[in-house]
Length: 188
Ligand code: NI
Image 1: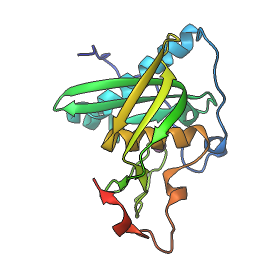
Image 2 (image 1 turned 135 degrees about the horizontal axis):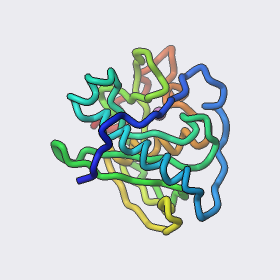
Image 3 (image 1 turned 90 degrees about the vertical axis):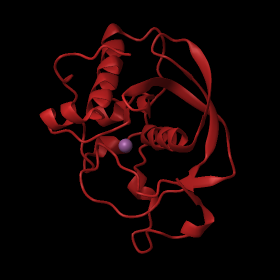
């Protein structure tokens, strides 16, 4: 269990129209400066707090499970994911300089649609994502690790990986036919 701060960390998230979201982020070198390590922990605290109903309501937040550095206007290849594995139990992932090793052929989509803390409007449509993937990345202390992920977590990682290349999930939806090829993919 992570000890959450008493107050919400000060995280300002860029909105959809901000051109910086379109930048391609760059790999970082280690060691990361202390301010980055603090920022990474703040981002994860923020995400975890956004998923806890009382805190979310207190601060009028939207729930989010992933956040990329570029959403704060910083073009470094870093993102974090906070995944609620069971009620009130959260897993944290710090992902720095990630490299995709393999992806499944099978594609899935989130039935209720994806969301993004930078996109504050209702959206419609589905985004096909690999059901499973393997990747390597570094944590905030420069330690390399391998990861195999699947289902919702795999979708969340692909969403954040796209942010590193300036891509938003809405780019992947055809506005004329937002449910195109839906029957080719498995819904989750
Ligand atoms: Ni996003």
